[in-house]
Amino acid sequence: MKVADERVKGRPDSPVAYVYRVASIRAERLVMELGIELLGPDGLVDDSPADRMVRWGLTAGVAGGSAEMQYNTVARVVLGLPRTA
Image (tube, rainbow, N blue to C red; front, side, top):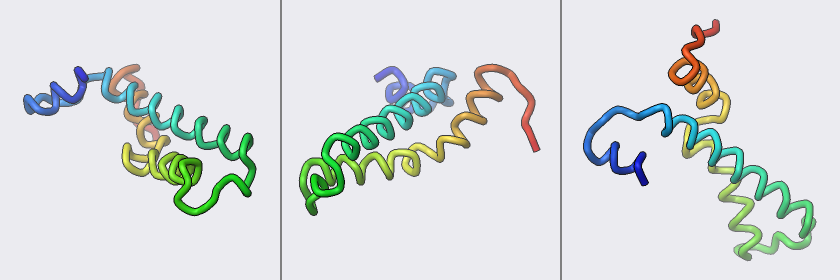
């Protein structure tokens, strides 16, 4: 909630926001992969809860910016590493 509060107040993203995005993208992907592993392709019936979970997991990275972009931002902003070419 802190991240959302800061955005509403017009403040720039804090390092917490960048780390949160990376963690949430990774968590969504892991849940999606586990769902596929547990249910198999037959469990992904159109518009079932599992199907929605997989689609959400696939789009999570796009919505938050690709995971690679978020990793680069964390490296620069949080860790102070130089930008790579």
